[in-house]
Image 1: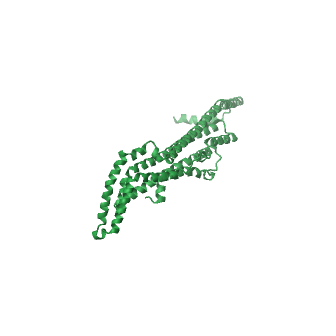
Image 2: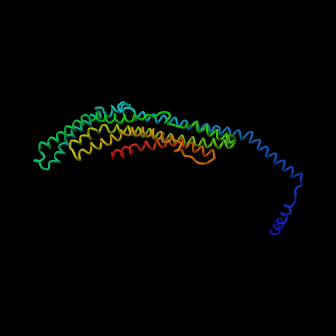
Image 3: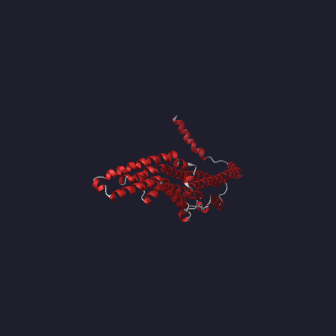
Length: 346
């Protein structure tokens, strides 16, 4: 075995030292050139047009997906503005449900009993010395407070309408125009990317295919981001409206606490703070929608990067298109916190 291996090792350098004839080398070079030419011809005639065709399809699909996302976003913002700028009394019959006799009437009857209970409980709490309590001044204050409470309870629905109409008037001062929604359209971004590819001579073959793939992925991610942001805005607005409706039946019961004074009145104060905050959210939501687009209207706030790579530029352009929607969704979701912090509503 060892001798056989030694013979092979001694023969291998001899085989390597053998030189092929010149005609064989020429034939090998000729065959290699022809194969290379055939491969190049196949790429130019078959693969390159196919890659260009696929890249164009993906590029167009990415454009269509982002345009679809913008259309959904426009619909969501329009729904949000309709909810915050329309009177709550006329939306889907919900007002008649919470203010009708079946619901509101029951709470109003309970509030009448609680008003008397709170009045007596407040008088007992303050009656440490009956002789000092039953003065003309103290009795006058107590009955004035009782009369005001009765008026608040019986007219609580009018108070609700007044607060709601005041917040509605504020929300209607915010007008969203077409120019506010998007300063740079999807078509403008994709047209500029296409022109950049043509200027660099990369509008065919593998370069165009890679650009189309990036456009397709960016379109999918962008559309999903815009869709989620739009749904969050619409849900936040509808959630705010539900909170307003849910507070209405509790108005007379909460306001009845003013009859007792001091600690008992905290229920009415808490309700007024909560309901006012929910109503003012309509103005803050409308302002957030307009402000987010105005904030990103300046090119100075667009994210930029010093790169000549067309794929990086395309991804960054799509990111800049989606950023106002993400900012709007974040602002709308935090509208309740803004109102409560600014007005000290807890």
